Image (cartoon, rainbow over all chains, first blue to last red; front, side, top):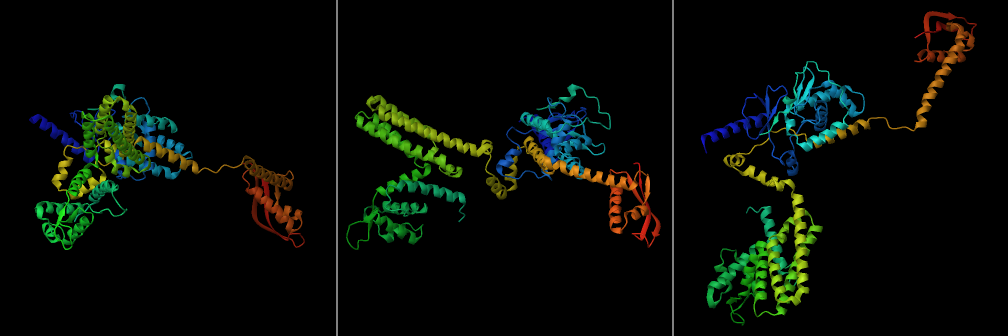
Length: 201
Length: 396
């Protein structure tokens, strides 16, 4: 094995170790590609997320088949519901990939949540929503900005396959339509070619 | 002795084959050996006889030759073999101590050992080769060919039937245990077809028998496919990914050195532990969320009942309004003492007061009942003690 190949392997191994220990990593866009990791460019292109590439057929479904418990999350159903609502709010262009999507607001999420529940908002809802948002943020499913009360989809959503996305498209149709977002800050102007930077290597 | 479940299972499988083999010879049920190791004892005894030469062996000599096994076990097996005639006295007379062994049991032992490896498949292969030999023998007659085809037809029917019944009636575990029936089936079928071809070419008159052989072969192939289909369906992606059952992993991780463990994971990429939300879980979560939302809504009422309370409230309100207007009699306000005196006795007065209070408290009626500090005392009146106050119309 040439020394270059060895270095290459070491380089890959280092990144794998980093990503495996910390979950998806946000790195400088100049970082060279790493085998086995999918690059997901952030909306403004200033950084790139490295997400592990799952071989097809592998995934959490295998855990279920083996009878092994999945990684536990508090209030899994509530959290999954909020994630679905975040997708409905942030994935506005349903024909494009879910990543990077648009910025959604807490107000939108609360409105859709109340609509999904089919009743006026209750005071306990906000506690549930914020808790779920924090959990999803910690596991990189979404990026939740607590200060501005805004949410984006997280880098992990690039692992959704085409069939996942079509299921989600259906799901979004069933959820109530979110009200228009009123962002507290001006979103950075986005051009179309910046948005489809889900590179797979 | 670290007997594991797997060992026990393997033993059971071997015994099952033996039991099937001896089913045709057994005099009564339940007399089969329960431990395959006893076959080793038998073999050791027969080996000892082979070594002994023409003089034969006494029981004592046999146990001595087989001292690797417990003495009583040897004696018991020896007796049993003698009862079945596998070992006989050298000369049939009383007090004869020396015995000789027949060679047939040993052949049977060899056969059994082979059977236990593949449940008779290897033997079936060889029998098929033998059949092919015999039907291609220049001296063979059409009757030989017919007998050969008949035997093969029956063997494959039995094989196919057993498998088909297992597929349709048994659990997957049972099916997997008996998967030996499905092993090497392609070679078997090929060989049988070879015999079939030979016979059909040589004796075209046997086409009827050949047809039944073809049918039994096809039935067997179908049964094999069904069984394989069920096993694959059950095994799912776990098998498709070439993953071991989880117990194997657990045992391995508990019993391995760090180096061995590390070597296994070398070059593998594992996802960091993170909760997964597949699209399916999200759909299910939203569905259940919806249901719990609708569960909190008021149960549906019949439409007829829905109007009634509304109209009752309205009548109530109109009654109060009429009473208030009657008391006011067109004036903007009226003194309470006057109202009480008009009513006469207290019994009537308190009913009027109750209605004025209700009118005062009613959301939709614009009347007000205001009490003041004074009190009218008049022994001559129907209600001698009356608190002063006014009832009046207000604009809200």
